[in-house]
Image (cartoon, rainbow, N blue to C red; front, side):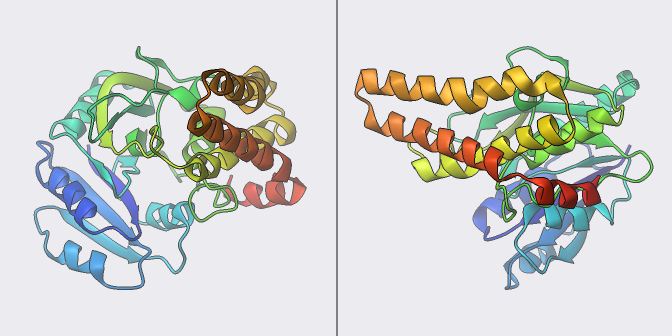
Length: 292
């Protein structure tokens, strides 16, 4: 089983080297790295030139848009399983061998996701479920992100909706939208709580409120897209909880604690999710259908 690892990169140097080193140290060697470089200089190309231990396909993207860059990479996949590691994540040495073994032992599954572990603290990021389970449309938001997503290649791979993700109109939730659409097509996924991918948790208590806002806009748009334009009403309770109840309750709780920093983060989250929900419209949906 061959892996095609698509990594879109922008503005990374040392941390990208850490990712390359983690690939060099994999105990499973049958993979290719598809680098999609969004930089306007040659920093990434120089790093690629220094690594000859594994197959690298070097591509350029003419704009800074994460989903657009990944779609470029999807056109060059030659493996049996495709993944989307971020340029600031690190693979444990046995990651690919574990994924390969899972698919060999469980051929009924088309998708495998794992858990994100903070690079510095080595603690699981809080939103991931603690127990392994089958992925459903209800639990998508708690069963993986793009760096932990592995998909069997079947016929033509669907594209990412380029409105979602960094550089798009809605700066996050691209992997949730992608995974939801895969499940809608009939693919079956499994979340493994013991499959770890190291990634810096940039939504920690020290992160600015603006970071929470930027991540939240995509989630609001995600709910609007799949609720009102595709009529997946199964998402309604989760939407109501995450867009309204949770952030409002968080603001009230933080005021009781007199924690103004926490209040600012919950307020930014609320504003971002509402803005994404409101701003996703008929024109947005018309564009998204070109990526179905």
